[in-house]
Image (tube, rainbow, N blue to C red; front, side, top):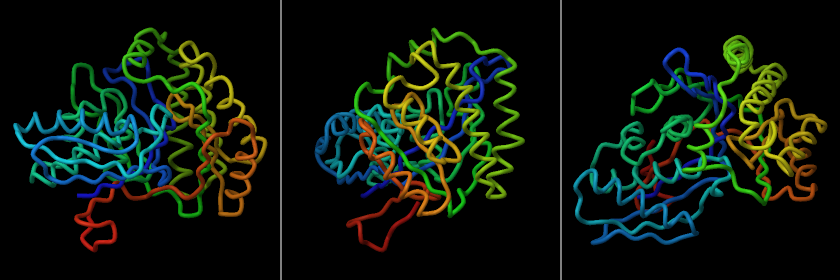
Length: 322
């Protein structure tokens, strides 16, 4: 089995207060590069090969999934390409779901995405990566209900306009917050003012989503940038500023100056992005970003309006599905 999954951009959270019985919530979109490609075949025991730390994590996710289903054999997993780890692009969730989906198909087990997420321990806060793995595009999710272990519900899913392009940069240096450090950070963040929480929801409902539905990039970008700035203030006590200090914050500032309609940092970073319209504008922005010191890896292209690809035998095979 082969599973190819796009990276995800986390555009922001809706509510860190949780006063209405749900916390977090969020918006995000899928991008085809960087991407993850996993191959898996049945084997007597569980093993993985490929870039570190993806191969080690693949074994952990695979072991958890097989144990849940009382499977006493295993699989050989090969990571052909990986999303940069701890960069804000959803590498852990996409890897967990891809490994679980490959094993589910190999052993004819349930493969609905919320089941895969629960079994592998993903979507504990944000479910953006889970729903984008399933369908791609742009997703709004409604936050975790207090006391629930289920992934947050998907509230809406939209196609990203075909002409919109995204330039993503992953500068080197400090990795984004993850794992136990992320749990601790959320535990110590002060609740944001109710007014700013209300402002985010107002922007999403009355500016961002209508602009997305109408293909109005200018309005979409303004709303997204403001949401990112508000979210940045929420997370500043944990990350040292509205955006991750250093190259990430500098790149966001320059992408705004260079004409990106919407800019931001994906999750804890260090990945940042700028959204423009058309190939020419995207190539120009990518060249400008790539020319900056410490820009790191730069990816440029359309958004991914499909979720993970799943197929048997060889990547060129005709039997692919979603």
